[in-house]
Length: 411
Image (cartoon, one colour):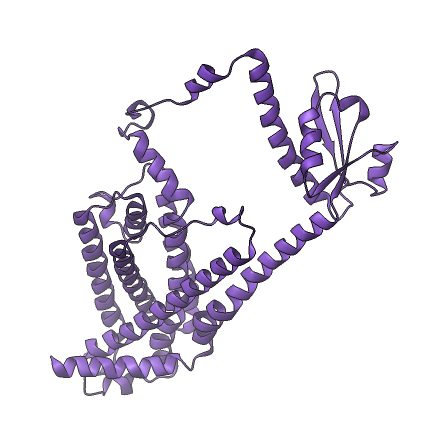
């Protein structure tokens, strides 16, 4: 046993050394997560902050039709209170809009009382003006509704009808889900579980593809498989050592991507105003046990991903063919966890045995506090078992046409 582990480590170390010299591996596993992602996201955030500052220094000039101002007092109040918009009066708003002297013009159309907003598509701020007017109009509509409710005396008890307590919504879903389960599903979907799990799977796959293809297809293209077969180790040790190297590269690449994401989030927390930092979800509620479970799920998902691309690399006849197959596999594998976003999908004894989907659902259950021990164990055992089968198939595919077998068949 000691000699087998020693041989595995030797093969894995040589494969890691070879991968570290490959340009594709360096670009997709190191340079992109360490340099490209942070620079891109931070650059976008800086542009957004610069644009926001520019809007405050040069507010959007919005005119409201004089005859319509009495109909939209809340909207006028919102424009006056806004830091990024300014109410202006011009004799001919449409002409001023065409000459880009103003960025927006609001008018209440009669009959019907429909409020219309005009922007100039040729202006470089027309998109900003349209979004800002919609934003202000939504707040004005809310205040107008509140004013009408107060005028009609429908406050207090009337608003209580919006607080409906539902114990079971079986008639709607057919699954007997409680309202709490639906709220938990929406929370997990909109905040952390699905998004981070899918992102992690994506970056792990990006980090596993080229190390796996390099480890297997170059043996064929450089015709070194025959000499590799002469190594004084078992055939399965060679393939297992290659898998270990791919597993290590994918793990490190995924961690680099996650670290880059953390750096970007920390930078945004430092740069964003305090009233906007609440938009970024917090992980303060996670315990050390939960973090340990997340780490376990991460490792088993990396093992599964690495085994998939080891099989792709061992089956392919060339690096180009392996690239094309990997693209298809990546699209297919990324479509599966999207199902976890749909309401009503939970980790149970059926979904616990669906590869990839079970890991994402386990993450979702973890964040909602509904993860049970037995389904979690089933997810880990199933993922490791399938990974082992894929590694075994990789060995059969890689050594299936070795020269020694061909010579025996010829005789």
